[in-house]
Length: 239
Image (tube, rainbow, N blue to C red; front, side):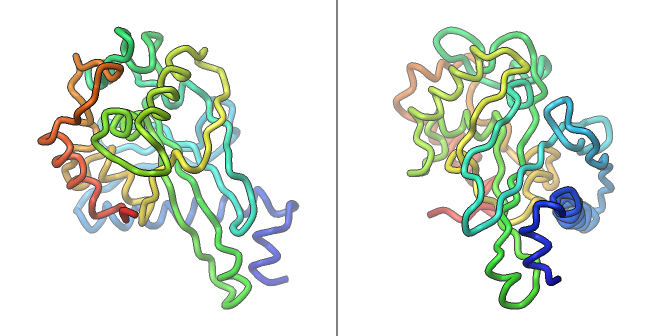
């Protein structure tokens, strides 16, 4: 059996997920070490709370859900628990309003993220190597798109606003269907450390003014947009 067979075979799903997590974990730990930091990371266990592992730096931590798909083929939509993407109570003042209500509602979520692993089986067929592309999603990216700070043809501001309404109106345990086109392509899982743990310092979470209502937004804040896009530039290839 070669690597390509292992990656495709349903019987090896759990082992494949552990391999993918180990690869992403290595890239994140290496990035942190290069900056003189030491992150802590829990290992995935039973997914009964809507996430797989937690990233920790000093006194800050946030949960992350792993999702994976084979390319070519494979899933294009994933079920994500609403509470994972809803902002936690401490982050309510970092997010704007929508229709007069705080983004994500007032019940309090996890402010977590979703890391998407896309496995290129053509590479494993040709040279028996594990080649993975990554995409990422969290509340701050969705707000940046809705506020027109970040523009992409795959995920429009109107689509982001409608998704934020769905997220706000959903119960915490509701499972939301999220298409791949809503995710942000990143060059490495280490991007998450830059975005959320500020390794290095980032303006990623500063994606809109707290008292700003997205439903009335027509023009992005140019200064904020510049800061935000410069924060993600080292990690994202713009199409």
